[in-house]
Length: 126
Image 1 (cartoon, rainbow, N blue to C red):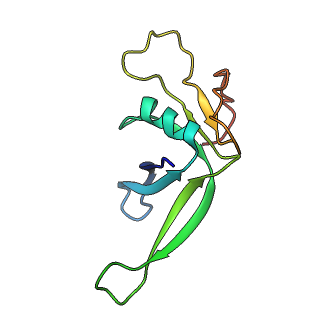
Image 2 (cartoon, one colour; image 1 turned 120 degrees about the horizontal axis):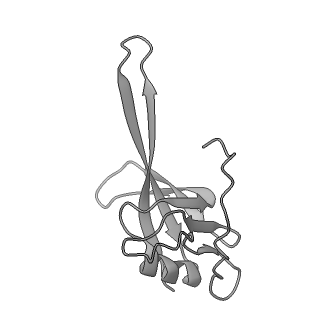
């Protein structure tokens, strides 16, 4: 069984009402999948700086580091059957045809199937 572990960042910017300064905040999220089709797609297309859409299940794991008495917790986005990852930008060196990268959905069996790379809805507020 193959597994893919990766981290993605989400950025948020806002103006501090008291100081008027711009505040930038970055949150890091761990992504995990055991779905062979998604693992293959991530090996081929995932690179630092790529813009992605992730749809998965939140899962919190409890674990203990060797030699420590206290538990540690890690919350991850698990790409399970029905989960999805889609690249929203073109990779470096793309042919410039404007098509989005294929997306993949985690299936119960078999590899993930690429989508047609259709148009994005610009009315979504994020």
